[in-house]
Length: 305
Ligand SMILES: [Fe+2]
Image (cartoon, rainbow, N blue to C red; front, side, top):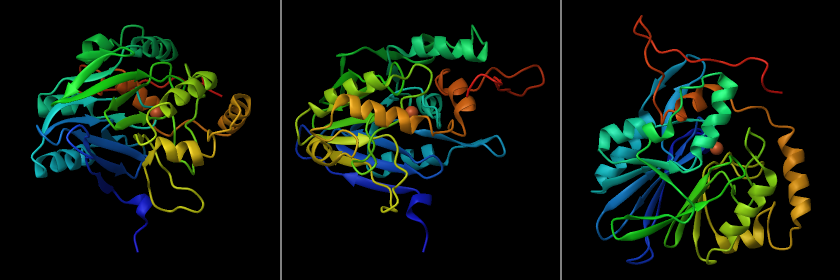
């Protein structure tokens, strides 16, 4: 039998009524990422969230099977893509944003503090002029900004901690909370990347858990657990509050912070981070090809512990 954690998995979380989106989660097994389609059941307008451009770090090759799969689901369900969204510049996978913008004609967007993240990484790569989020994204959403998917309202919630400028997208009874919470049996996301902040992550998670208890929270990653060998990505605010092993009701802030920081010291850098951020901070574009017609990435050495 195939290993469910090593297989693409698609699940539909149905709309709960006219003001509740249909959500498809599409699990990408190489990086344990969950990509989402959030659609208005009435108008069929949809946003694509955190879609992956597959990158094989052994052969330094890109392929498009994940975004192809997402666009197939869009087509099968008669959806019209209105937005290409990312929650933050991902460290573990390359974003499909630029490709999807080209393939769908929809605008791409990310959080308003991404220029500050770009400044940190421009220094780490010594690429002072490479990243210009205002050039590579059509919208940079600030805290509290609103936009719509069809007739559904979306509110942008700044939720820093994993990065300094991550955002969550709250669409009625669904919230896309990326790398803040993991599933209740796995806890929370790491906060040790440059610009990360455990204290800020705690605050962001508290704001997410203050949403109505029935809100469906959709997370950015799942790797299973010792006991659970299949990927999961949806749980309600109420489930996190009663069961999340890192932040359930009654957890003291200082205990969470100590636990998170202790765990973070044991984690290596994600395998794709130095390629991914260099591309993601360009909105998912490779660097300009050089005079031989090839694109090249730059790798800082001895900059990370
Ligand atoms: Fe991330």
